[in-house]
Every structure is written in structure tokens, then in C-alpha cells.
Image (tube, rainbow, N blue to C red; front, side, top):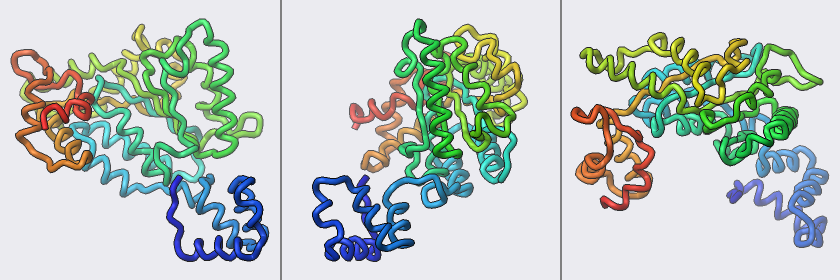
Length: 338
């Protein structure tokens, strides 16, 4: 990590070095010795320096920004008024609760490219100074981390050990499970004890942790409801969580392509919110494209983005209202149209 130190910390390091205390240790020994020696010599100043340079599980590196999360959801997440509302209230309420009864468990559902992964990143960025790169944020992808069904017992053991070990280090840990629709049946049930209403298990409390599941399962049902609202002439913004959540949880529980099929996590009501992500419309794809142009250093141009959007696939086929792949392909396709 490249860190530009404030003048005060640069001075501290300079004083440590010229004092002769660690000059010989700088090259052959790790930086941790440098910081350890500095802490021993300079006391409080040295400890502050250590916490400034190295991520620790305290307010120096964990600082929930409720206003920042709201601003990010309002400005950066397109076409997902239901998800934005649920995520903001759920995360803010949980983070402001000094003594939660259980971990926060969110299950995000919708078709590809609708913003599920992006939202998990926004949550991390507004809790951890290092964002999604924080040592306290752990991302698991079904096909990468749990590829072989024959090894499911080993995966269960490793997953339990990983969660237990990391929550022991930092109670405010976040665990993101991507491709839940490809997760082996029964694997997620192995973490049920950590998601339950328990004060502690073997001396470890999991109540401040956050678990987020990302899945395409339920996407077809969400799309049908959204299309029906459109065909009935109703505004997209009229869709509310109550129109989707109950059927969504039942769909995920029954869905053969769901990692939570017949799961005890649903049966025991351990998932706090099933969050629906609606299919994106043409106008949302345009917004994604303009934002992507800006992020890549180009001047956002409607002509370029509309030309790209016109080549994407939409449904229903004749009306071309909703994007089949959302905003997922925009980043890689953009250069072809510039």
C-alpha cells in the first residue's frame, strides 16, 4: 500500500532512523520491526504511527459513513429504488445498533448486470477505509473457491474455520458470497451457527459481522413482476419490497438452481432481507455508459453510448424495454464505440 505520510509522521520516522535505533534493521528486517521499535521508543506516537500505516480493526480503519452510503446509492446505482431503500435502512440500522442480536444477513437477487456486486462494494467502501480491499472484507466465489462437489465436506470445514478465525480478529468482518446460484447444495447451511441469535460460540461473538449473498436465482420472477407493472401501465417506482420479497424468498427456497434451496438459513428466518434488483431499462443503460466513460477518463457523450446501447439485447423483443445483461458488458464494449 502506498501511503503518503503527513509531515508529522515523516518527521517521526526520520527521528527514529537518525537516532541509530533501527538503521541496521531497515534492509534485512521487515518494516514491522521498524514500527515496533518506533512504538517502543516513542510510546503513544509510535502506536499511532502503526495504526496509521497498517489496517487495524478500530475506528482508524472502520468508520461507517451513512451519508456517504446514501449519496452513493442515490448517485451511482441506477434503476434500483427498491434495493437502494432496503440496503440503506438495513445497513444504517445495523451499523448504528450498539448491541445487535445477530449478524446482518442480506441476500441480493436479480439478473446479471443489475448492480448486486456493485452494491456490495458500495457497502464496503462506506464501512472500511480500504473498501472492498480491506483485510476485513472476504469475498467467496462459488466456482473459484468451491468448484468440486466431491470436496464439500472439506469446504464446509475450511469455511467455518475461515469465518471463525477472521471474526476473532475483527468482529466487524464482512463476508460476501458471489454466485450463490452455483453454490453446492448444503454448503451454506454449515455457517448457520454464525448467523443465528447467539451471544457467542466458543468465546467468539458474530453479532457485528455482515454476510451478503449474491445470486441470479429469483431473477426470472423479478423480471416477470417488473414487466407486468410495465404492461399494466404502472410506474416502475410503484414497485415496492412487499410486491416481491415473500415470493422471492419462496422462489429461492424452492429453486433447484439456488445455493439456498431447502436451506436452514431460510427455514429458520436467518436472512434479514431478500433484496430484489429489477431489470434495467434502456435509460439506465445509458446512465451506466456515461458513468463508465467518465471513469475511464473520457468526456461522456450520449451519441457514443446510445450507439452502443442500440447494439445490446433487450426484452420484450419487439418493445426493447429491459436490458438482458444490464450494465455488465459496458466496460468492455465501450472502447469499440469510441
